[in-house]
Length: 123
Image (cartoon, rainbow, N blue to C red; front, side, top):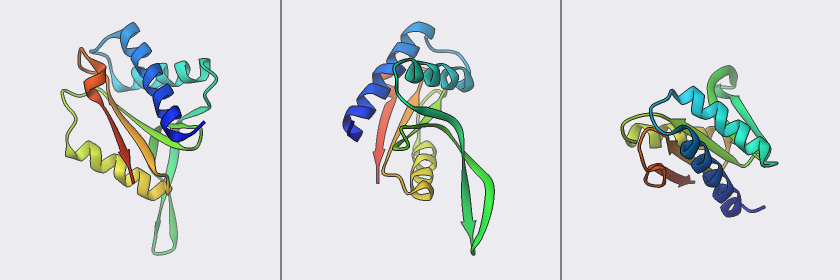
């Protein structure tokens, strides 16, 4: 499955989670449910994946944690905030840079209409 197909399937799963739960819950709830939904659809995903930082040759363990890593190709950053802003973009771009991955999705579950709260970031 290429990255466009994969991100499409992730978005479909996120829409199902949002349709079922609606807005107003904590990020962790959406993260757990999205992971379950992806797994249930046969899509390999991992939650809270450690992303170390290499600083001057020293590996700093658990510096960051990815919310969800899908098929070892796409980072999904789950949010439950009033609106996405530049800080959220920068966070996902940092994760992409550190992981050497090229594609990430920023999904904000806190609004009534999910489709306007999904952002794809590519490096």
